[in-house]
Length: 242
Ligand code: 5HY
Image 1: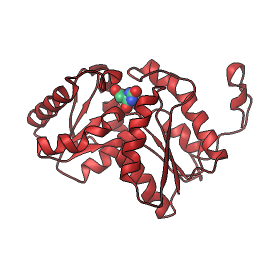
Image 2 (image 1 turned 45 degrees about the horizontal axis):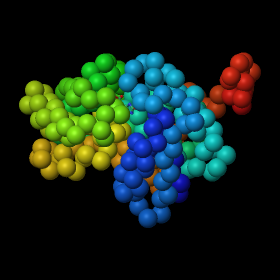
Image 3 (image 1 turned 60 degrees about the vertical axis):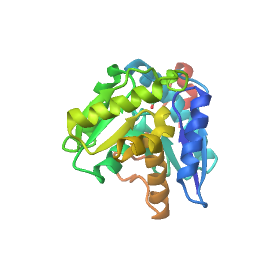
């Protein structure tokens, strides 16, 4: 099976890290390719960035459909474009926040989310509500490290570890959810130091897609997620016509 992992931001160094983590998580019969769209923000840290990332995500889904991709991951903690992607894709589409929250809910009474900038906590809270995770999510915290500084700030790992310790104490939670695809490589180290399960959405989502495909399951097209209704699109979106 072939799974396409879409990093919605256009920073290929982050995409390479995401691909390495995703490939390490899947079985021998699963091929994973990670991509960044040709257009979009260098990182996603606001509603504006998120909105502008969606056309690129959908273009990658459309390309995957032509290339025979079996399933998709949207590798950004805001889960941008997820519903539209599910209308477009034949195979299952799983985004990292939804996947991480579900995995974390299996592992303890409650989990804490630790994300990057405080301004993205509202979006995470909206996702908690839309995914029905209000009972399991005990708090949403930020380490105040910009997404692209995660790899450049020498103190990032220590700051994230401290933020996780603080979150567990303040929320009295049992599990940590990492709120950024760029944190995917920190899972094991943080879990060893914290003594609790630490869930990263990239590995959670790609293994979820792998499981759905193994069971022969995909998005229902009966109603809401039926293919989009054909119509014309003007301006730079002329090519979006289906
Ligand atoms: C992400 N932004 O996972 C989110 C993290 C965030 O470019 N990739 C990004 O802070 O929402």
